[in-house]
Length: 463
Ligand code: PMP
Image 1 (cartoon, rainbow, N blue to C red):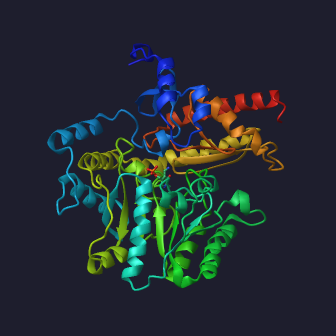
Image 2 (spheres, helix red, strand yellow):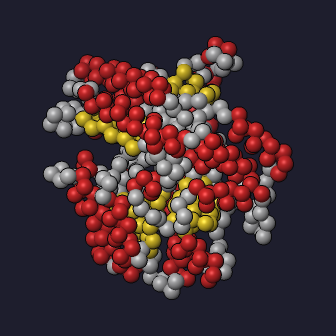
Image 3 (cartoon, rainbow, N blue to C red):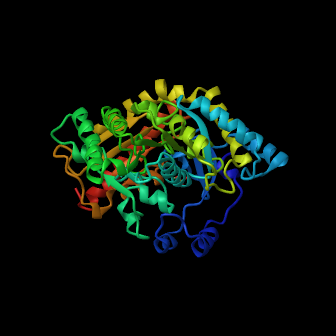
């Protein structure tokens, strides 16, 4: 179907109704109302179309989730079939549904061997809330109730519920709603560009991990419950830690007996070239939060993989765990997740990211370093980030008030490719179905957008 055959949509009327009634997440309501939303009406493979018929290459997979690409009839079919058969039944009162049981089994096949149990939620935020409650329960059951504190990182993203936002390290989120809640502390992120000058990446990775040890000693080792981190920080700007970081974090957690939690909401289900980011970054978590890629965003589903160390204690000594959601293990979501995982397996998408598209994206993306605006460009699997710089030879950044990243983001959108701006870090995480030829197309669109950004910055006298 071409854009011209799409049903006519009254964009202005929709924008007006949107502005009048819909409070968007993470949005300045007033300024969006003045501008009007871009209304996305259709998706196919790695492309979306807006209500004016523009085709846009979705370099962000929706919101890091559309891993098997848009328009997969297989997923629509299993959802419809499950809805007709059994649209919902709960799992609170000693009942279960077939898709939830089968997905639990399948998840233990694709996750690392320490995981044989899953707790279902509807989102990544709820997954991290579950982690907080489950970990504290675990330490109570272990007879160490003083172990309450979670250590996380600044500029981490772990969701937007009270616990999720507190575990996250976004100061602008903490500033609203009196967060973080007590018992959550943050250390610096392993961001080489920001903190690593004068060190090799490997030296810096070790130093960044030791910030964890310092914090453990500062708050008291017998009060620390867990360390939580994204293998590669996503919303923080695709921050890829040096190879030495996670193994050293693991060593420190082991030394102090602290639980290690991997937030795999973005990195899970193939994004980094392994099924889970912890496998790529070389560590063995006790718990893993997941969401997004488990259903490729076709329907909300999240959860926590619970490793043997924790699961065994909850099962053997726990009694009733007073936690759960109406839609924990929703049969339609679980049926979609099963088919989504089967697609990843059938089409060997994880292997493709590891051996073909990931390395190819790395080569093409780092070529952007020859652009006058690009001072750093890096990637892992199918996630990548670059830094826009005022003077790349001196590694001089733009004044943050200029919001140069947003200028670039606008040029990308107008030029037909979606990149996200995190400050002046421009990031992508395209669908895992992306082909080598589509990577070429995406890089061409990004380069053209960078050129137009450069022109605008020159015209404005910002360079
Ligand atoms: N953890 C990470 C690493 C995430 O990236 C996100 C969402 N971007 C979340 C948790 C929260 O997930 P949700 O928005 O589904 O609650």
